[in-house]
Amino acid sequence: MTKPSSSPTRDHILAVATRLFVEEGYVGLSMRRLAQEVGVSKAGLYYHFRDKESLFLAILTQNLLEIERIIQETRQQETQARARIERIFRAIFSRPPEQQAIIRLASQEAGHLREASRRSFRALYHQKFILEIQRILQEGIDAGELRPMDARRATWVLLGMMYPYFYPAHRAEMGDPQEALDMMLTLFFEGARAGKKEKGAS
Amino acid sequence: MTKPSSSPTRDHILAVATRLFVEEGYVGLSMRRLAQEVGVSKAGLYYHFRDKESLFLAILTQNLLEIERIIQETRQQETQARARIERIFRAIFSRPPEQQAIIRLASQEAGHLREASRRSFRALYHQKFILEIQRILQEGIDAGELRPMDARRATWVLLGMMYPYFYPAHRAEMGDPQEALDMMLTLFFEGARAGKKEKGAS
DNA sequence: TGACTGACTGACCGACCGGTCGGTCAGGAC
DNA sequence: GTCCTGACCGACCGGTCGGTCAGTCAGTCA
Image 1 (tube, rainbow over the protein chains, first blue to last red):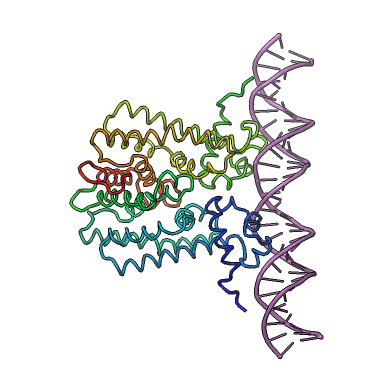
Image 2 (tube, protein in one colour; image 1 turned 90 degrees about the vertical axis):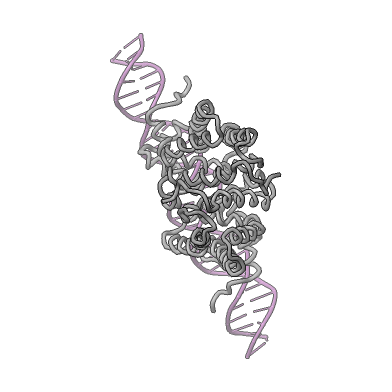
């Protein structure tokens, strides 16, 4: 008898936990508090998830795979780097806020996981998300759409621009998400447009 | 008898705590662990600081005031927005890594403070740091150096670009700090240079 | 009807949390 | 010599942490 990978209660736990992990952080959210907010006993949580770490990992992985799907879908439908990036992040920015913040959480809280989980998750995160973005930028560089630069570094700069938007405290200051995204894309792609020299290339 | 604001032990506590708060987060670092790493008893910590929150606040404030000093110094010596920003962040990027990461910590962990401390710290952070950067950008816009755009939003985009560099986990991937900074500045200021329309203005 | 099971609970565990207490002790003041 | 004080320690507090476990109970199936 394998445990089913989906059930109303399990899904509800995942949804509430996602929101609360984003608000409170991994260490900051206790299983007691979570149980209370879900409306189930603490032991009930442990019926559905082996431990706190598994629950957290399930959230990270679930959202990551969703983002991977967005990326792959976009790769097929767009060919230009800018169009691809724009489409990917418009899709991400139109998801529920707490699901967007997973991108930040993955960077921020992975350090609290046990070594084994951390390594396997980081590999997934890197391969399915970071390297895919990097690849899109690299292809843009190779095609002459973007000027020559270190694609890995540029990936982090691009992602970094979005980070403040994933903090509940700063979110409000950025105003409308899609407008804020307009600015980020304009700044990044105007700044990275081919036909200029770059100082920071390696 | 007022408590002295500086002593070898107190300074040592601050230094070690800064590093550990950056690595583990506010909730993730226990006073026991800190005491052990400092080489003092837990009660010893409480001789120098009223409670955990005061210690954390002391670190944030101390580093913030140092950054304020850098900003004010730069304002007097440079007049162009780009030169000012470059100088400020070169100075920040050449500080010890754990002190740089304070910028991120201030955004990230302020939520764990008591309401009163949080409000007063946020006010300080906002006034002495965020608004000063915003002001520099706004002056650049007014002077025609940068094209018209929402300066507040642009401030967060600029700061965001630096965020990944303040995560121990991603720091290594960005390579040499000053080179990474080159890229960020180039991207931001080429992208924001006057003579273009902006889509994301409010 | 009775055996079985999936979903869940209440009570509990040892470890650890932030914080406080009375006590100690080197060294300067008189 | 004594007193005082700044700087610290060991032991302890009530409370919370993640996690476990025996038991319950509605619903399915024979």
